[in-house]
Length: 103
Image (cartoon, rainbow, N blue to C red; front, side, top):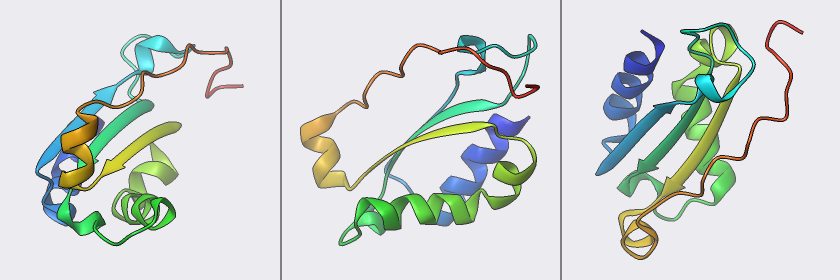
């Protein structure tokens, strides 16, 4: 299962204090049961002192195989523990605008 693999890899690489991986494929024009669209919320001390681009690059590196072969879309919300204390939630995902990974 792709979702479990994402969780395991992010847990091992970033030691997050909070990690949420949501399979949002059902919100998109994909076959039933697909695992292709994900949202991750990662809170980690590893992000301290990093700009957003560095945080996203870290996740892209950890999930390089999945992004190349299995994941069509990945929404990333990355926070330090201090940022998360004031935030406590990630933005809602936008509605699907159509399209398919099979287009």
